[in-house]
Length: 158
Figure 1 (cartoon, rainbow, N blue to C red):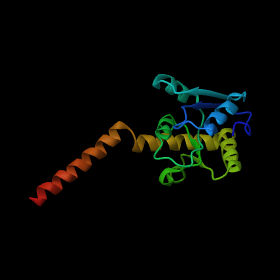
Figure 2: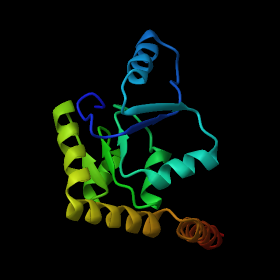
Figure 3: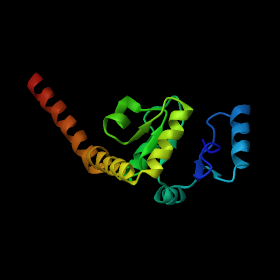
């Protein structure tokens, strides 16, 4: 993506889960590109600073659980351009764009970064989705409701 979008700066954070020639070569190639900075693992404070300057979170994984990186991005109103859409929520809630091919990924990334109106809508959707579904207060209330239902069912069973 970085080669195909030389006008975009890319920050790569983290390290491969498993050492492989593919990962080693990919990071070596990335290091040679002027628009890529590979950070490796970052302390939380530095990672949060990076999110504060990011415009888009790019995810090129083909298999994930539910990426916490998505939540971190959405909490700051940062849309995602991704190849992976957990349970279809990116499309369903307008939290970014989902690509199935490299060409589609480049097109989505370019569009999101160059269309201010589309970007603003995605950023607002991301921020709202996070606020309505993933803050500590929202999750604590859901947890409390679930516990109350369990207690209620237990009391009725006696």
